[in-house]
Image 1 (cartoon, helix red, strand yellow):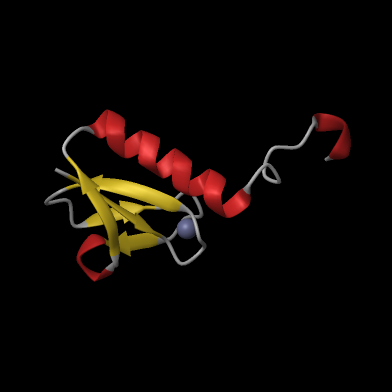
Image 2 (cartoon, protein in one colour):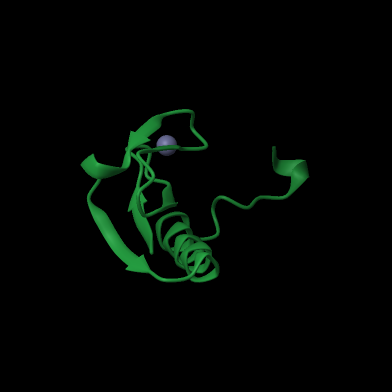
Length: 70
Ligand SMILES: [Zn+2]
């Protein structure tokens, strides 16, 4: 079972059930037991897809910009 949750920075991430800590890409160490779990899924593949959907929901297309705009 994989647990899907959000970091305080707003990024969605997932951790295998039983994992105590998960490091977000922002650098914060998340205690999985203290996070509000958004949903659960059996497969890691599904967890990754759900996380991606949650990211798109939050950021829309704004996260992805072309190199000339950086
Ligand atoms: Zn974070």
